[in-house]
Amino acid sequence: MAEMMAARLVKPGEPLSIESISVPVPEADEVLIKVAACGLCGTDIHLAVDGDIPVERMPITLGHEAAGTVVGVGGDVTDYKEGDRVAMFPGAYCGECAYCRAGRHSLCENSKVYGMARDGGLAHYMTAPARAVIPIPDGVPFEIAAIITDGVSTPLHALRGRGKLVEGEAVAVVGCGGLGTHAVMLAKLLGAGTIVAVDIQPEARERALELGADLALDPMDADAIKTMRSHLGRRGVDLALEFVGRAKTAEMAIKLLDKCGRAVFVGVGMERPSLPPMIAFVGREQSVIGSFGMDRADIEDLFLMVVEGRLDLSGSVSARYSLADANDALQHLVRKETGTVRVVVVPGD
Ligand SMILES: [Zn+2]
Ligand SMILES: [Zn+2]
Image (cartoon, rainbow, N blue to C red; front, top):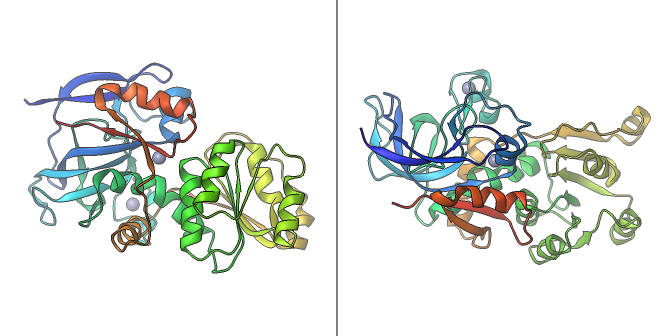
């Protein structure tokens, strides 16, 4: 049986095991993909380093932001053939539950997320059910396709699907790392009015201003909210997105809102934010909304935005690592190195 290299999570907190395992064999409804690129994200740190998101089984090949070429198909697969370029939806969804039928694939009742419940993309090859792979149009490079599947689609879903951004509305982005940086770009693209970026790193604030933010705030600055209010000429923004997953930043997102404002929590965390009294939500008609992942349509729409030249993600891949260096790639994210938007592993041949 053919062998391949894979970066496997054996125990959270320990380095990934870079080892040789069998090339997986696709089931009847699956395709076999030669992985061309696989992005890493904050969730991978939760899984492999902090261990605060449970993994269904170990060892497991990490990586849920993958794209590559179909090199084999199961007996029942008719939609794909060898040579097709595809990206993986981050979870292998069932296509049949109520959420899948409603197009809400991240909420699938039977989802098997790569790197959590089934082997992911930090390998030379992976399998995926054909229904949960997405064709990549010409003109979208593999690396860009890979990061779109999560790093770019998650903020799009938060802004458009859950945040219901209306053209001209003021938007605040709290946490301008990988997801937040893309949120700033997408808010601009979707026609947001004033865009306020919030990050403790001066470099992240600078980048946000270059990519379309009108104002960048340091949350440690005691006058941050005052500065925002005088810039906006009103009490706050219409939509605030939280990408950090900490109590303090969630509380900040709510504080940034004007009347009728929506705070959307995207960051994954276990902390418990303290909320304003109920009267504040009632009297100001504010809402707090959760946003998890993306719909398949978010990814497809982003591919089109890139093809049409409306969205330039060429600056989004900050660093590339080989599969053998997958642990270095992970540590790159752990160190929160300045200038990092997205880190990608390129398995190569
Ligand atoms: Zn992710
Ligand atoms: Zn489903």
